Image 1 (spheres, rainbow, N blue to C red):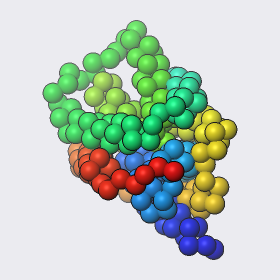
Image 2: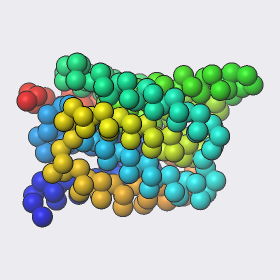
Image 3: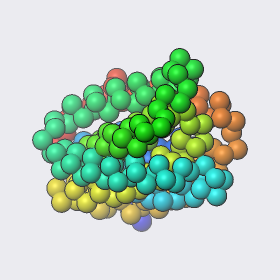
Length: 253
């Protein structure tokens, strides 16, 4: 096994645990580390990350589903819209400059992470009745676009939406988010592959590490109290976003 393969395996394990605990695809960890540790160009880091995110969702959702923490009917509606958003955004991603991707990515995770601990400021169950499905379609499109463009699972958008707007508990929001990200990440991966944005020397090992880490992270998340889990999610996101915005930048190649 090459040094790059070993690094991909370890990186995937760390990202999988992170994703399983936070209900994310792990892309908020994988994207910056693929650039900093494996020196992948920005667009290729996003594409390679998204390929591994598919497996994060598949494996990470299992412990949540077994614990009854997946809203299946809403997840189906969100998933259909997210596939459309992911495919369109991934196809558009080559036109977006790498520095812009970095800024958008860092800002996104900071804002969404910081919003969660203050969910009490938002009216509970703000979306209900006839608005549930239309709002779900919009949320799915947005989360899918984030996944396709930034190489993450979309959970950094989906989880806060489900908590703040639908009144979901943190466990249910994260489990539903993981279920939704599977088709969205798969659709985006196809588009990135067409543009040559997947590093095939790393992706299989990254995916293997992610599979192990995501299941372990999901089991750990279910053992944490809802409030504690929400703070863990928020701190992880804000810390990652700050590191990504202020960290040393390497020129894209």
